[in-house]
Length: 313
Image (cartoon, rainbow, N blue to C red; front, side):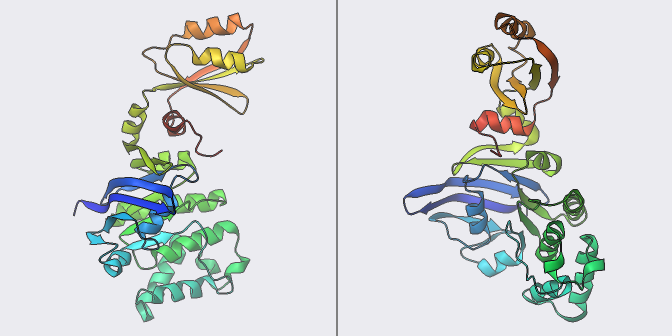
């Protein structure tokens, strides 16, 4: 089987509001697939349909060849979900949480005990296994959330904002596990995040959703090519106003201009852009350039160019 996940013409409405508009894509077996979009884009709704928590108005999703609508038991058996909201029992220990959730998948006795030991070890929680979850830090709870999702060795791991509010150690632990399980067990991973640098770091292919509609899909290289951008200029000046920003936007080859932490970022098409036009604009507005550098365009900047929005406002 080449495709592990097939989303087929999924449409979802809540009353008169169209939340997902005829969405289709495939995720190949063994892929780490980035599913990104701003708040309200429809990501959580699609994940809820994918995991059987919601039904679409039309369309279907197949997981490992099983329809989530027609064969929900077989489809759900293949997936592990790391939800955005923690799904843990605070008054239980880490060990007892895993024993409880493992029983949902028919795991008991020695098999379950061995698997609990494995997932606690891989998430760095083995030494805290008998402590109640309510004593855990936010990062530790996130790691236990992951351990619960993988207790049954799922073929498809769905991760919805898994690093929200975590410390660097927990974040790195989550990333290392994703890479490990993907490489060693060929687990298919669907990863949603507001942090584009995470998606750029670990994902092989990407789907961009905005206002319930597909914006772009493909490999990181293909997504960047869609924006017709191949560079970013970061400009620090002594002072600037809206008039100067508008003048920059009028320069040939400039795709977009925005300000981030006091630095002007200019997204450019190198084939059309000429640096002398930028220097002339600064001279005309009597603006002194303090620092200037050029870098490769990032996925965050591509997202801004394609949607006109920042992923995190």
